Image (cartoon, one colour):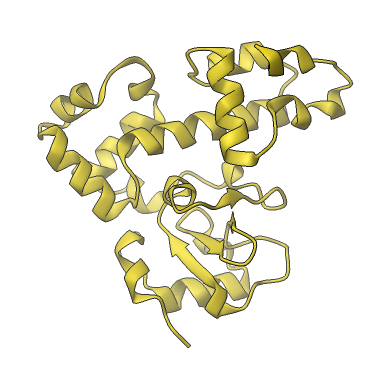
Length: 208
């Protein structure tokens, strides 16, 4: 079996392909939030604890972040809901530039500032910051931020009765149109398609 050595570079520290695959097959909760697995046959990515029958190992690749999986062309699983994964603990306990950048992005830094501002805050140049993120997180800071906005919006849709317009701005989107476009790009579905359980017609948002 090919162990996907080309994908190790996008995994968090201290994880390799074999460890991730064992954790995925065992649905090991200790690894939830540490990595995501993409299934080539379905083009869907999952948490290690996904309840769906595990795919064959040769069809799976691993990513350090949800943004990296989406960058590779995978869609979030609607069963295990990657947006509900714990905040990646692999990054939280370290003092690396990428870890500090991830925390700033998680706090919405790029919703109100630029990549250059982020690089300045971290004390590095923009190009060097991009190289660091691609090497360690598998995605650029802007891609990490875009995924964070969609995930935050999905959590608000699932857990609150806020209107979709309110959710769009609370999650950091600059407009409802961008909110809709991001959901269609990520899920191939509109935000309102996830809100049917509330019994509210917000289909007008899809035309904004």
